[in-house]
Image (cartoon, rainbow over all chains, first blue to last red; front, side, top):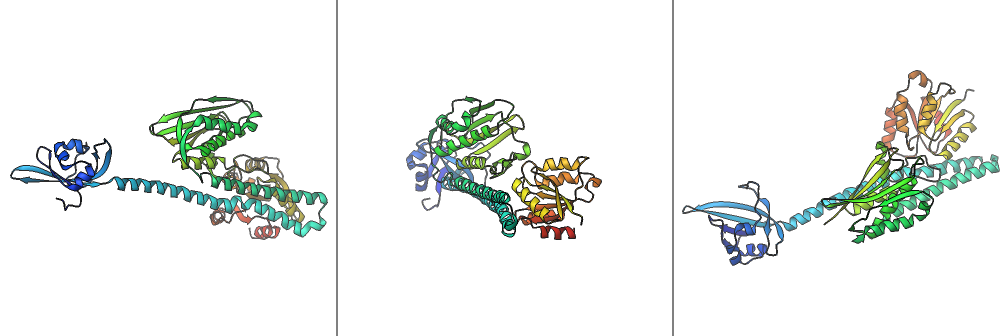
Length: 336
Length: 128
């Protein structure tokens, strides 16, 4: 029995352990005597499923400290002089499961990183090209025609070159900022109300110019990144201000809900709203939905919010009706 | 010599401005109208009292309605409205997928890389 590669328990027809090996003691964290004194139901969590005769199945063992540990369980039955015996084989499965979960997380992470790379590829091949092509077009014309151009025309041309280059440097700066978010990510116990107030203070200027109603429900404490949560609130609220409806007073409601192992943070506004066909697009970098003044390009704020949700292994979702308003929901993993 | 009557659609007004100057300087083109938004251009195109149009230069990446969406709606317009009109798309990207899409689309007579060169445009128009 001691030579067996796994933990082994032999049960008599009354489901009591009569024999076990050293590996069983190690796994169950009990001496051989203790094991024989306990019933099998005190050692292994009983399954409601019908047991498979041949295959290994996943079970949990009950440890003396009350904790559960995953094992692979299989059994064989035999008869000796009309008495029915069962032999159980247990293999530790905890490490394998932990590793598997870590791999699943890694996989999700890689998928996200890949998405980000594709997006960056699109940005460099398209969004950043746009101002560059404008500069190229204007300077080409200047090279060939500057002699016959009026002072006024020259100035217009140079101003347009200047604007395109400002636009490009704004895009590069926002991209760098976006990429830096989460580079020192660390979760800690946070008061979300504080984060929200901090964001509101930062938005002071934009808010002071706007008439608005703010309804803040008290938010719970949560394990999260401090800078990241501030930035999240700031970006969503800043969008609510930017895309408010000109027809009514801006109203923003912040609340939270608990759903199983998730904490939902809802930010609702009565602004312009987003059409269904644009609801995915707005989370992409530099997507513009509105006719923007020349020097301003579509933002990066919501892409950063998506990134922040991802850093927390959560997600962000949007419900919006064009002309009525939007609700952004951040779903964070939550243990309570 | 007859000049081509052109409508420019690009959400960047500095691009429209440059293209208008380039086209009109060549003496072969007259810019009839410029639009920052494709949906407004589509409306204009359907208005009964609009002037004659030979050529539409259409940007791809625009907010609200992009170049491809414009083409989708343009396709549904009655043939007599589109008679004699050529649509060319303007692109900044070197996206081969876009090139194939444009080649396969009968409404699009060509794809021109920005910055626009009048010689390139004229050569494409002769082929079309």
